Amino acid sequence: MSPELIFQTQLVLGYVAWLLCFRVYVWPRLKSMDLFEAQRAIATLHSFRFFGLVFILPGVVSPDLPASFAAFAAYGDFATGVLAMLALLAAARRPLFWLFVVAFNLVGTTDLIVDYFHAIQADLPARAGEFGTTYAIPIIYVPLLMITHVAAFYLLLRSRPKAALSYWSFRKS
Image 1 (tube, rainbow, N blue to C red):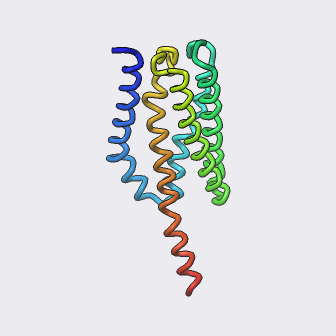
Image 2: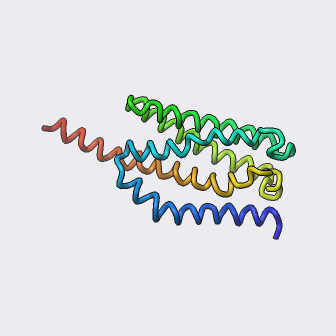
Image 3: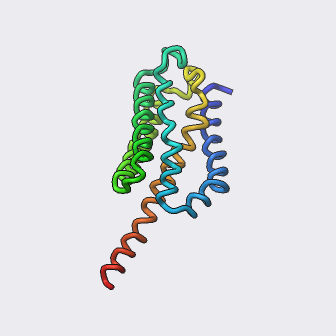
């Protein structure tokens, strides 16, 4: 089997495995939680994205890993992790918390989508060995990150109509 096919197979199976786990164990819990607590749990997971700086750490990944991929992935993860930490630190100030929740989800989702684009442009699936010890990040960690971004946006959008409805119900009374 070619490195490209192994990488692509493992990436797809990473999504399948996380979706199965998420559907059974995580999603029911997140849906049953208060929106603030659910978003705080998601922010906690994403606060570890500072780890993405490893893509630019000499000696960890191949020096042949394309800079167009490595630098964007590293700094996009770093920015997302910092924004998630700021959301957690701002939990006592709800408007600021919600601002950082939206920010880290927008930045994080954009980062992952652009990382996929850069990886395809650089033909990284065929050169997957250049990830070195970071190989597990796109296979195991990235699928969970993308799934939780989608969940975060869904929860945010789902809560809007209820909040708007209760606001307008209150105004009419």
